[in-house]
Amino acid sequence: MKYQQGDRVLLLHSGEEGEIIDFINEKMVTVEVNGVQFPVHTDQIDFPYFSRFTKKNAQPVKKIAPKIESLKREKPSAKYKVDNGVWLIFLPVFDKDIFDDDVVDYFKIFLVNQTSDHLNFNYTLKYISGSDFGLKNEILPWADFYLHDVPFDRVNDNPKFEFEFSLKIPDKKKAAHFEASVKVKPKQFFQKVEEIRMKQLAHFSYLLFNEYPERVEEEKETNFNLLSKAGYRVYQADRAGTYIEQARSVVDLHIEKLDDRWEKLDTYAILDLQLRTFEKYLELAIYHHLDSLIIIHGVGSGKLRDEIHDLLRLKKEVKSFVNRYHPSFGYGATEIYFNK
Image 1: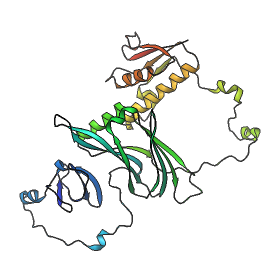
Image 2: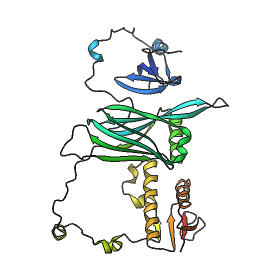
Image 3: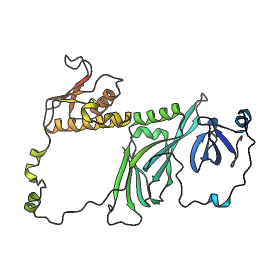
């Protein structure tokens, strides 16, 4: 092998120098730069000596003996570059197909804790066909935890990664437990893989939560009249239907209509908000027994339209739907008709 553990290497994309800490596989290594560890493809690193030699007015490189105390760390450090919060990391492992092209064989799944909380977690991976994997453990502050591998072909089975978190040391001001999950649709998953391939990144990630939540105070007084006087909304069960939001016959999913801060959202957050809004008003239309519903999704690249059509095909309440020219919306709207 060209490299060995402990070699000094140059990161070609940034010009930084680091040290090889570990080998992930034949094509990937773990490199440490200024105390931060992260995975790198071997074709993105090189020995730094040629770069040093070709620099003008280069000064002789002094060999500095490592200090023993510099190896001590007060807290473990996560290997993956992510913002604060708790993240789910997907690290693709590649193999060669019959045409000698690089293809994803499987994903290594990591839980990364970029907070100061020591957490217990109960993890379950579920597919449409049922639960596939479960794990109960704990994760230290500012650390990462390897969960397991997921074969690439299982992504088509709509995996859902579910977590229940609790503090290792209970805090009366914090919630007793907290649930978070990531549900990835196959199309979005494949887009993520292609994105990191184009950007030559080692992994992609999903945020589970930013901060462990505060405890919600439970109302001790159960007298409904007192609750009503205190400003709470108290509903009668037999009239619950009257409090459900009214359905709409036309729903505009253009992002500027849904969120005033849409310019700060990335592509995946925008698509997620649009789809959640669509599903909400689709369910309301079904509940209120509407004959039809018009969804304005725009023309664009057609991604939002295709996602909506995929969801409609799974709804037994939907009789038919069509994306045809409309005098008010052009080809940027889909008309949905419901079963009676």
